[in-house]
Image (cartoon, rainbow over all chains, first blue to last red; front, top):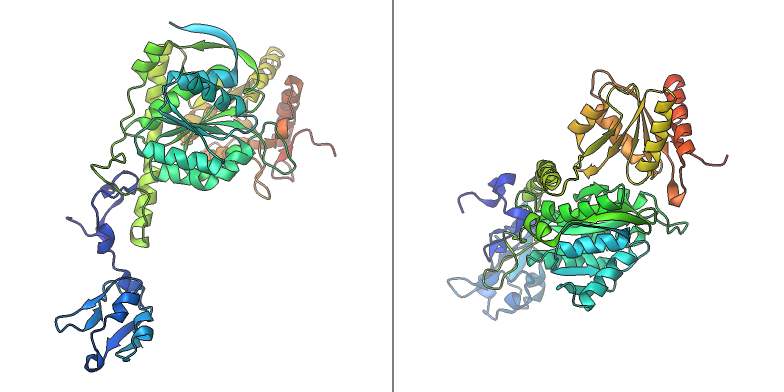
Length: 97
Length: 391
């Protein structure tokens, strides 16, 4: 795509806003909705993946070390992962900090 | 070949839909639209019309089914009135935003409460800002011709918007009129196959009616607005071609002795014919009065209206709907807005009348015109006048 979504003019839109290519929702940065961000103490992480199972956004996966981590492009900061993580790896912090 | 028959206007409109050869009719019966969809159901059941008739469980479902049908590229028709249009309202907004070419006849009827099955334009006004092209019929022939033109306008690649054909409940839907039907071959030539550019197709999947975040919503709405504004050009073109093909000419603003008239009465819908008799009689008595009738409600024909009303000193507008707590008649508001910036502003007097099926007779229209002239001279403490109310 030549222009990013927020550069499109009204003339660039498909008729009726029809979306012709699949997967366009993946370009939408729902992470901008976030007011809290998950932070990690990976020393405690046992790589069980329970955070990923509970994440309603489906944005958590293993990083290079195999620790489970949210993709902040999509993470809305709901904090469900922090609540479900029983080894207490995840702490939610205000985005302003 | 062309045939001229005496026929109930609802049946004639349904026969016009048949001439347009739709693929899908999805509708729920409601007075005074019932005969239109009953006859279409008959035509499909009898094998005279090769279409899918979907007997939905509500008007909300009717319009929802129409969305799906039009999205699949099918030629789509529905009809409703009053409470049915109100129940349908949520989905009525969706069709133009998704640019789906649906044709809907609206048999204009008052909205409850109190319950009334008779005509006024409160249902029409409830969908004023939905983004549909809206055409008004003054008699049965126009209802038939408008219906055929509506498919052509809606499906034009430069338009791709749904079109409403308004016709007054009972005073048009249930009267028997002489109607000239065009020949099937002529209609086939006039109406090319529907060719929606991006239809639902399993081999080329698309997503329609998606979520739009704030960064794109304004662009979407402006694209929709420009499409509706630009559709006027195509409406004019289609009416022009219709006139050349079928010999009956239509204009967004119809003038009746209004050129050079100092006083102009403005009407919309079936009352226009009765009003024109009043105009004839008053002119015979030597009064310089004329009439304009609005045929295209949306997109509003600003230029044509300014031209038609140029030189008039008093404009009397009759609305068949109240904008409660507002300026009175919705049509009068539009006329005032259209003329406000003109250098020589006429006096515009708003009358509301003919509500819930109450007739205005020829002498009634004379009374309205004479009262309007008087109010234009003396002014009024009220935003608008209500005609015929017992005080």
